[in-house]
Image 1 (cartoon, rainbow, N blue to C red):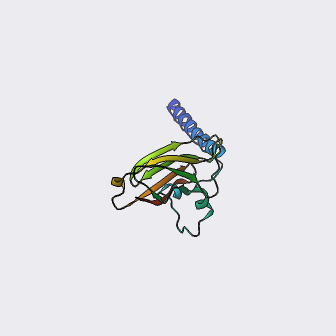
Image 2 (cartoon, rainbow, N blue to C red):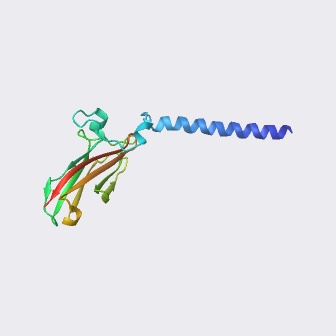
Image 3 (tube, helix red, strand yellow):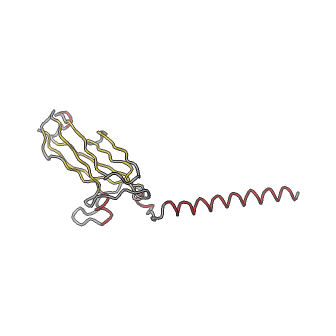
Length: 159
């Protein structure tokens, strides 16, 4: 009977030591505190005329012509933040994606090494069928490992 008690207490001790080590390991590798509320939904600018510092560094910035000709290629650039988002081993942009309305148009995955500036360029061709009412909405999304998914949009007129 004493052997069974010993084995149970040894297993419980090993398990609790492993849980404590992984909790302290996360603190060492990710020293920046994370707000779990940022991962519950897609983050957008609450007031575009008065952005918070977090919004200024995480909202995708779309650069594209406001009017394009149907069938002709044009470039859409997506940068992250009015002040370019930093890239490092503990805080980075995981990907940048571009949608045309609800349809995916492209995605670029990034590494956490810190060598990149989080910016992407997409070449897009729109047809009249893509814009039945004369406009389409470009939607850019990016995911930050510490601050979740962010989205912004821009309307483009198709002539």
